[in-house]
Every structure is written in C-alpha cells, then in structure tokens.
Length: 139
Image 1 (cartoon, helix red, strand yellow):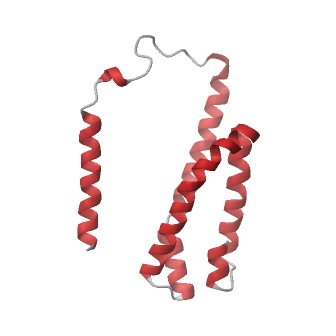
Image 2 (spheres, one colour; image 1 turned 30 degrees about the vertical axis):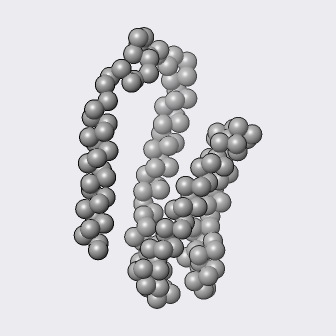
Image 3 (tube, rainbow, N blue to C red; image 1 turned 90 degrees about the vertical axis):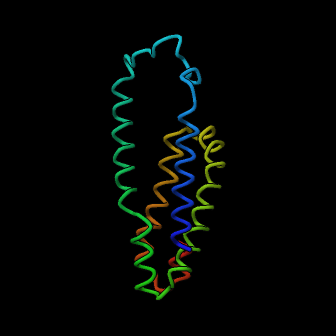
C-alpha cells in the first residue's frame, strides 16, 4: 500500500512536470517589456525577503515527523491516528487560505501574517506542556 502511494505521488509529480514542460514562453506575463528595477523600494524588498527567509527556515525546522514522534512517545498514539490527525489539520490549513484574503484586505498583509503566525507559534510551544492528548491536539 505504501509503495503504491509513493508511486502515485511520483507519477503525479512526473505528470505535472510534463504538463508544465509543454507550455510555451508565450504564457509568461510581461514578455513585451523588461521588468522595472526596484529603485527606492529595493531596501524594503530585501528586508521582506530576509524576513520571509527566516520564517521559512524556522517553519522548516518544525516538520511533521517531530510532532508525530512526540505524540507517539508521549501519549502512545499509533502511526495511523497521527496520520489522520495531520491530514485533518492540513485540510484546516488549506481552508484557512480562503480566509486570508479578506483578512489581508481589512488589516494589511503584514498585520495578517504577524497576528496569525504569532498565536500559532505560541500554541505550538504550549503543546509540549499539555498534560493530555486532547489538550495537545486542541492547541
């Protein structure tokens, strides 16, 4: 079963590669004029790129394997249950993208990013101190 899923995942990746490979350069936006230089906003763009790099690096450190191992060791949850939990949380995460656009329009992009990531990070830290599996999963 697992081998079949890996094969399916690899096949989907190969199919995606082949579909994108067939696209012509004409699908690119703005081919008729070169991109304008950043000018005065160069410093802001570089600072934002650095901020996003640090965020991506930090987010990459908290992979699903570590919480899965922790849930298994601390509460004795089976691999199938942990997989189901991560599946549901990933669906919730995907659904939250639809809420991000109205929030960003109302509060601004940076405020939306900060005030959604900050509570998320705090709850992730507090999960380590949860006395029961239900509290750990609720946070």
